[in-house]
Image 1: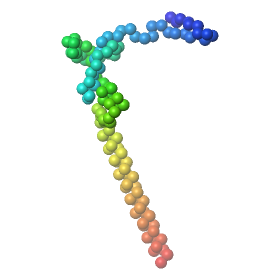
Image 2 (image 1 turned 90 degrees about the vertical axis):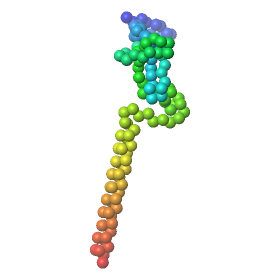
Image 3 (image 1 turned 180 degrees about the vertical axis):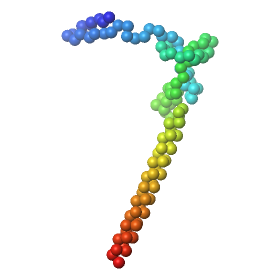
Image 4 (image 1 turned 120 degrees about the horizontal axis):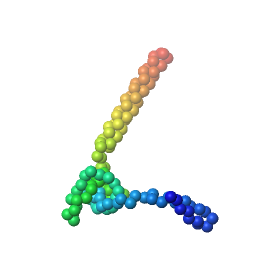
Length: 122
């Protein structure tokens, strides 16, 4: 069902029943930073945790929170839960090695050309 709202000469059509209504208390936990907070959410999970008030609540684990994000903490931390940083560093090191090998190969080829040119002019 839609309802129309007149604003000056513009009609806006707004959808009803768009937002969820099944909010419940949920604990969000950043295990890397050791930080957790209780809030309302519709997020689904099968895990639960016993909270400070003695009640048991659904648990959502997050990788980054305000306790671990550099924007909020003011310090730079690398939180790598899936090995992405290590894979990037390995890929970058391999690319540098390939670049150095190609440069060395080109240097040797230029030296051979120069040697041949020197022999041809003699």
